[in-house]
Length: 182
Image (cartoon, rainbow, N blue to C red):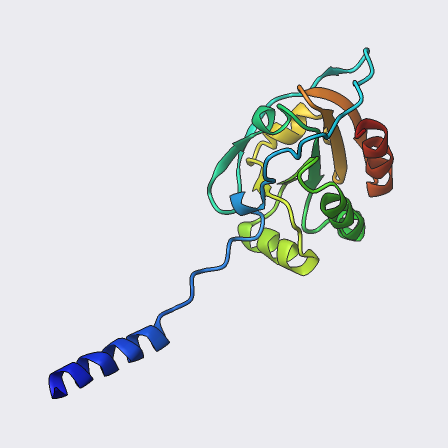
């Protein structure tokens, strides 16, 4: 009887002290959208639009994501930013609003440049960035593919990988998405 009580007490104490599961890493793969909702349609991109450069980037949780997998069946907005960029910070609230409004219809993907992991995590937490984010390499290979001179740059890519626009404001991204999403 005492052994049973001692065992029950030990199990109760163990259950009370068990650590909760870790929260998902902000900017990681848990922020990728779910399946495309049925009935969502997109207008075709302009015929003169060029193909968007494909790339693979490691997200903040270490998972890798490839742009062409994201734009396969829905638009992709690539948000090129840096934690030290004042305009990036001022545009982030509107980008967060757009990412929430178009959740599961449009993929937003952040690509940070010339940042440390600590500065990037600080930015993501401060601005409550809701979408996946990766860090470009030291040579800024991804940014160079999109002709990034200085952040911010916001690239809107139509389903299938056609680069519609490169923009510098979240309001312009909102206008482009309203034209694209049926």
